[in-house]
Image (cartoon, rainbow, N blue to C red; front, side):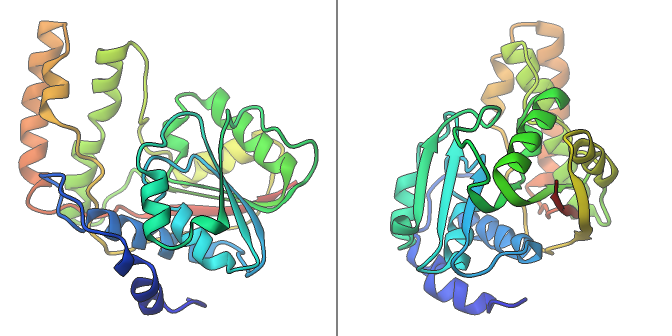
Amino acid sequence: MPVDEETFKKEVLSKIPPRNEPPLPSDWLHTEMLERFRVIGFAPIKEGMNVLEVGCGAHALTTVPLAYLVGETGRVVSIDRSRWRFFEEVTSSAGLKHRIIPLKTDARELPFPFKTFDLAVLVHGIRSLKSEETMVKVISEMLRVSEEVFIAESLPTANNERQRAHLELYNLREEIFEALFGEKDDLHYPTLEKLHELVEEAGGEIIKSGTFESGLPHYLAYIPREYVGRIKDERKRTELLRRWDAAYEKWKKGAEHPPVGWLVARI
């Protein structure tokens, strides 16, 4: 990779305090952030760029690596509709807050009238957009306001038992959220071919794409058992609790990031 990973860990990750959120290990955020750093190594990022990040999330997992890579003369505009709980805490402790402009907005209607950004990025966020219609609309907006778009998402495939453990627990999330709230969230991972279709439907042209395996542990399939226990439908609750218990037993022994599909596109 063009940027030394050890330097990133020393200059950034070492500044972020460990977290006490059992059953996740205290370094879970650092490990997830390192995976994002490796993934965006496939993006056409250069120092001094103006980058739009769609779906930054509460923990700024991709925001911090992006802000590091654009350097002191670059900027990252990070958008999300609602998940900001730990964002300022994480970006401040990483020492990169001054390179980041947080913006609460809906990515389906970006408030930029022209191509404002060198690059728009959506990493591990397609799955949270709830419908293909929304996915296409968001990608269309990204293409409209940036010169190039980089999208990366986990794939629904496993090459070892640890990846299968992640997928088995993660794949319960869509059903759990639908049973709890009446709508799907954290959708099943798309194939790389599906990502291509979505981009092309949004009017984009694929410049390059590929797959990548980080070999790192993955913790974010976890959802507390008590969430499942809140499901009102007794039959559904009993079924999902049984499946959650079985999947959690495998997950807690060790789960790993499945392969990630990525692509670069432009209009």
